[in-house]
Image (cartoon, rainbow, N blue to C red; front, side, top):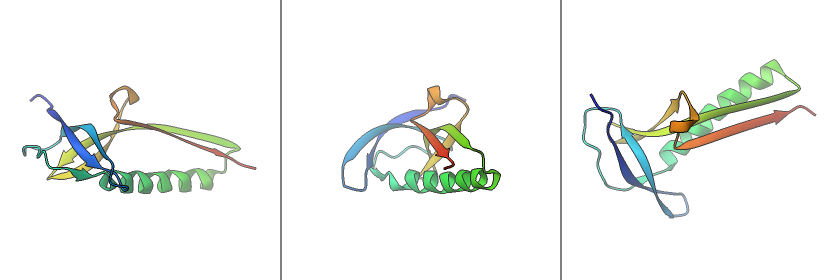
Amino acid sequence: MEIQSRIISLELTDGTSIKVEATAIDERKVSVQPRHFHEVTMAIESLTKDIAEAIQNVKPDKASVKFGIEIGIESGKLTPLLVKGTSTANLEITLEWVNK
C-alpha cells in the first residue's frame, strides 16, 4: 500500500494560515478542511516535558536532543509522528540543556 499525503491548511494560534504536507495514517480519506496546529503543538509540548524530566533526572553537564516530527492525520485529527530521520520530517526540533 502506498502512503498517501496531502497538502492541508493549518491555522496557528494567532489566526495565521499555513500549508503543510500531512500523511494519512489510516484508511480514511484526508479531509481538506483547515485544522488547528494546536493539535500538534500540544503533543510536542508534552513530549518535550517528558524528555526534559528524563534529562533532569540524569543531570548531565550538557545535553542535546534532536528529533523530527511528521504531521499525520488519523481518524480526522492531526497526529504528530516521531520519524526515524529528520530528512522526512515536517518539523526538526533541537532541545538543549546546560547545567549552570
